[in-house]
Image (tube, rainbow, N blue to C red):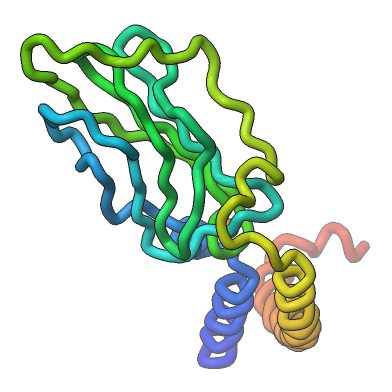
Length: 202
Ligand SMILES: [Cu+2]
């Protein structure tokens, strides 16, 4: 019984290391934004920025950040840039109404995450907004690398070595735990099978 518990614990640990259990927790999530979530602004912001709990990667894909107006048009005027945990995009808002900020960024663990928030723009009377564009800007890696994404070799080799080491460690643990689990499961099953397997033996 104690051994079985130990094995279950070890299996859970392996799954945790592999990222199966806390997959969602490992992903970057939004902790703040400008404008704030569901807020109403009366002055048009020059940029929209998103603050994540962890760093945002610019590889393999640059961040995608769109700001869509109440008319369905896009109001970002450039490509999104990343500074550690912050992703921002320049904007020129149009008319009054609800604006939806949608993002797709590469999480600190290398997986893409996407979601959206919205805010309301209520300009003062007489303020004329921008026209917006029909379809979102296509931002390639090159277009987005205006900032600090000028060290591709470092990022890839830096991430490769620890990953290989982790895989090796996990493989060893999996083999060990797998063997122990097999022993325990076989033992446990034997007791159960004795009751129903009489016919098979004949
Ligand atoms: Cu992930």
